[in-house]
Image 1: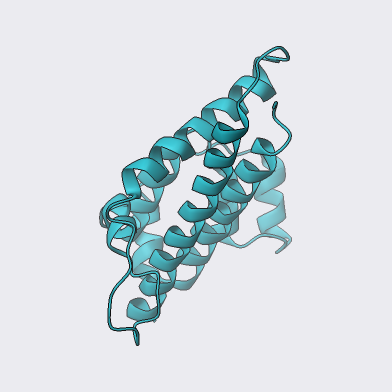
Image 2: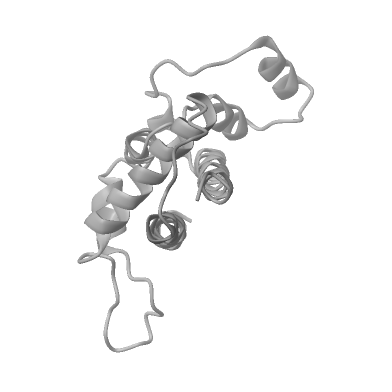
Length: 168
């Protein structure tokens, strides 16, 4: 298999990340203050003008300028914004309803999920930027990558939702 499903999976990851960053910054003074420490955002004049014309919020502008090339890009920014270790929060986030007696977390699966999400982002880079047209990914690896991105999004969204319950 080639890149047919990896790019849509990484696009959804990038989209979620930018929505989460924008929302956290726009909705919380403490997260906004933490975001002021983000280093070297990529910004252009069109971005600034979009804010002036109120087409973008401050959080959306910041999110738009952030790189999403590696999982570390995502987790470093989220850790900075929330003021704590995002990967640790991911591992410990309860993904089943709190009314259920036995908590379900990604503590045991986190390393596998991270490995496959990193692999997905790497393969997306290879296919999209290196034009590796002869490179093939096994069906199993392809499924692992797409599933890992899905599971990462489930856990990461739970972390953000838990933050909202505490912060708001």
